[in-house]
Length: 179
Length: 179
DNA sequence: ACGCTCACTCTACGACCGTTGAGCGAGGGG
DNA sequence: CCCCTCGCTCAACGGTCGTAGAGTGAGCGT
Image (cartoon, rainbow over all chains, first blue to last red; front, side, top):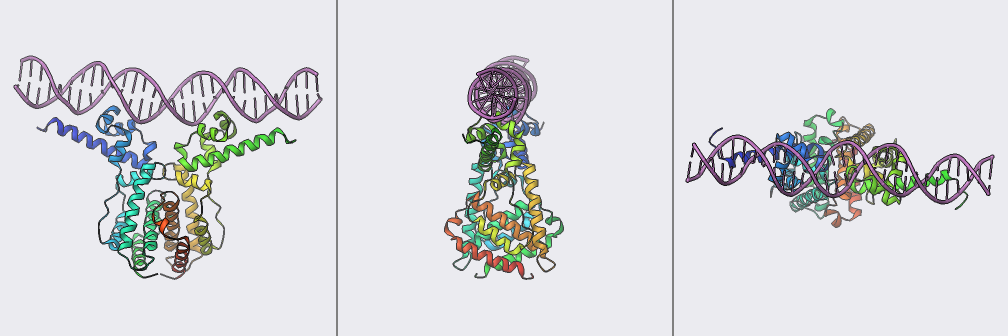
């Protein structure tokens, strides 16, 4: 092995475990995913996972996270999010979203994230119903994400991505206009 | 006891179990809900639940279901759904929705239901992008349902129900107009 | 070259799960 | 009035989970 120290090897193992955890949590959710399964996918023993991360909950916290909310450029950022989401979801996002209906801490994390998103978006809009339109937009994006990546509605097979993007533009136009 | 036969008593117990199952499945999801917990809430022993419904999966199938899709009146029906959803969700709906991200059969049931809804709505609309608008609408309603009843976004405290209803009207206007 | 550190594995514990079969006791049919 | 049906409970099994602690072997410092 290259002259890397033992610490580096341990750190690389920790990274492999974390990656396996993301995949398992993303695929099965927090409850259904098992420490043994994660350890097996990472090619190590189950108790090593505990020595690295302390508990299953702590491992989940380290593995599942939402993409950081950019501070500004709300309206255009929505387009980016929607555009990006047309591809695959990163496993750490998938892991958190998949558990948000069954694990209270995951629900709290998503709730906090979306609350912040609504606030940021509403702040960059005009009109007294800005908050309402921001709420409609954020929950709409969540709905699209879930119906596409988790429920896999048939309609996504028929509708080309280009049409979805065009719809997103129309949406932002509705967003910017006063009610 | 009134001169009801033993069969009637058994049927009433089955109903109590089913109701308790709906509550538990709605509150915790399929995996986290336990037969013992359901039996306890119904005031009976756990094995009686098995004698009545055969298995946990069968009990879930009997307890969790989506409201039937009305055959016609798609656009106005959406308004009704949204209006109704401003109140509480029935436990059988909550049970299915809460497990749709972690239990494959629940996901399949919701997927089939929403596919059908998209088809019905698209059929009652004009324009070649009718299917796209139907998809946007159905996933938007799902997003609103989840953000309100499961994630409980803060924005729902600030936005009065009346404003949400008005937004729903605007939405249907967008729905009916060609892109 | 030796010994010690430490990343990693092995084994096991206690809890809880879904599920099963035997037993019990009330209450209606003959 | 007796007996038998049957709704219900009790006790237990096999399995899987998260987690803990002892043991082991390879590799670095001296």
